[in-house]
Length: 372
Image (cartoon, rainbow, N blue to C red):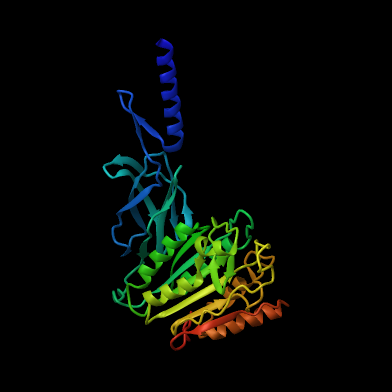
C-alpha cells in the first residue's frame, strides 16, 4: 500500500511539472493546482486619455496599465524611436501593473506608444499623439483635414532578410514629418500586428473629411494569382495558396483606405519585393512584382519600379527608390506626377534602369510642399 501511495504522488508531481511548463500553475495552500493560461500582455492607457492632444510645455507624463500573469519587459517609443527607460514608476494596482514615464517632447507632433512582452508574446499599445506647440499659436479647426501616414518597414525575415527597409522607413518617417504629416512607424510586423496597425491607422484616417492618407511599405512583396501581398515577418508560406492566409493583400489596403477616406487623398508607396525567396514557385527572381489594381478615384499607388521588374536595394544606406524620393519630396511646387518624373530622371542619371510606375489618380493636384 505504501508503495502505491508513493507511485501516486510521483505521478501527480510529474503531471504538475508538465502542466507548469505548458500553461503555468498556481498551487493553493491545500496542494490543489489551478492552471493559468499564458496570454500576451494587455495594455490600457491611463494618461493621456485622449488619443490626440496639444500642449505648450516640453514634457508629458504618460501612464499605462499592463495586465500580465507572467514576468514582462516593456519599451517606450516616440516617433518610432525607442526611448531609454527611466523607470519613473512601476507599481501594482487593481488593473495590473501601472507604469509611468516622463517624456521630453519634440517640437510639433509626437507619436507615443509602448510594447510589452511576456513568454506568450508581444503587445503593442494604441498610439497617443501629443503636439508640442512653442509660443502662441492659432488653434486649428477641429474638423480641419490632416495629413496622416503609416510607414511599415519589414526586414527581419528568417529565410530572406533585407538590408535597407528599416533605414528606408526611418528616413521616410523623418521627411514626412518635415512636410506636415503625423507619422506612425512600425518595424518588423507579424501578420497579427500588421492587421491591427492598419486598422488603427484607418480609424484615425476616417475621423475628419478630406484627409490625406499615406502608406509607405518597404519589405518583401509577393504576387499570387494576380494579387499583390505585403509579407509579414512571420509569414512562411510553403505554397502559393498559403500566401492568401499568411500575408496582407495590397488590394484590401487600398479598398479600406478608400472606405475610410472617400473624399480625401489616399497615397500608397510600394517599395517592395527586392527578390523572391520562394524560387520553387512559378514566379522566379525577375518575375512581375505587381499587377494592375485599378484603384478608385482619389487613390494613387506609386511603385518602386515597372511591372515585371524587381526593385533593387542598391549599396547605400537607403534603397534606390527611397534615396531619390527623399531628394525631391521637400521641393515646393512639385506635384505627385512631377515627383515621379524626378525620381525616374535621378535613377537614370545614376545609370540605373528602374523607372517608377504609378496607377490611379487623385482629385486635383497634390503637393507635398505647396508652391511658394
